[in-house]
Length: 264
Length: 245
Image 1: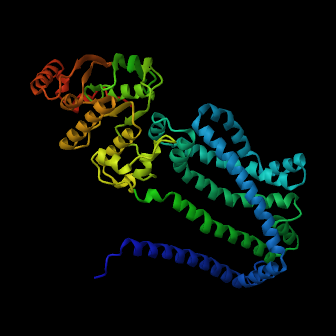
Image 2 (image 1 turned 30 degrees about the vertical axis):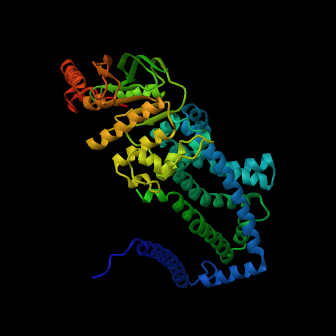
Image 3 (image 1 turned 180 degrees about the vertical axis):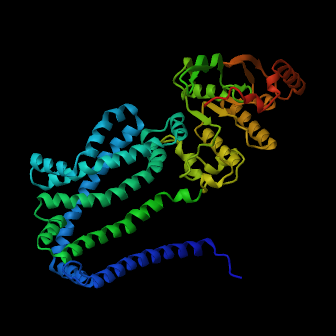
């Protein structure tokens, strides 16, 4: 009869099993790509994984890929932080107060429904063809969905715990840090994870429209030359970086901060 | 001093009409007083406590709290589930106050040293006792306890009640508690405030004789039960006018 696994065995087994599944799933995707490329037999239109990897490797040695990735990454991070701060703070205030919500909500609906293209073009026209305009446009495009997520999270805050903070006359900073922040964290994490992936896609559009560097610019260049290998090499490299950020930074962070839930 | 004068409190029903729940509830307490609000469940005891605590700003009347900290034990424990018991007890400490002896605080409410655990590891009865320890940890000038001994067995309730009485004598705290149980009220309180009618009013405000005078207490108990028959029943009295709070 097998032994009943103790907690330590079970958790290490669980983590590695999840890791193996994720790796297997990625491998299956690569295999599917390789088979499809092989069957299509048209290296111009759909190159296989090997030429794309070789091309990416060449571009890395060349320095062009790291340079463009770094530029795009910087814009992503700046726009992401700006959108999280503005959307998060306003979302919190709107979730707390119906009056504030009535003031902000119409703006958010307009911002949500304004075509991305309009925001980007207007930002370039009004601010100028520079990085400030690019980052600003992305932040404006992204902030409304973060606003909505955080507003909904704020509305679910436990009123009973609020009252504990009130009757014990806790300082505002203590209420925010110890009572509200732990309840908002899942919403902040959801906004961050959804936000990051969308932000980088918007950044590419902004780069394509008016920046002389960055991945969006490079993709446009390769598109004009019908160089699918180049497009895949750059696109997938950035997706890979995002996958690493997601699994190595965001997910462990979310897991750690919500650990108390699993003891319930 | 605690001075409470609630002239009227109403709740808005789902249909938008106002339903009065409290009328002309006035009482006061001095340091050392243990006031027990006694009445069937659903009569509005929690509403009175919430109004005293300032959680019902929408009422007619006036509440004056004594200077100093409030210690509150709600009906639910209301511990922060992401903080350990120790962190929960430290949370309510003012900056600059000496760090509390957490083991001693837990021993005060007859709990073993569970400070390292998360609240979800405790039973409801234990969690409520942690909530009581949290209320005592701020060295309160007034202690507000909503059905403090529900979900505790009788021996434990009696022991905890005695410890609270002792603390009140030593520190001059005012205690305001609610209960639907005549015996619990008589065992602890220095004064019993009986609630009845709809909307609820104070139907009696009686001083409790010294707790070692068993015959006097027994007479008062009998008197209360004959005058207010609703105190004899438990549970079913709630039906028909239970409150949203």
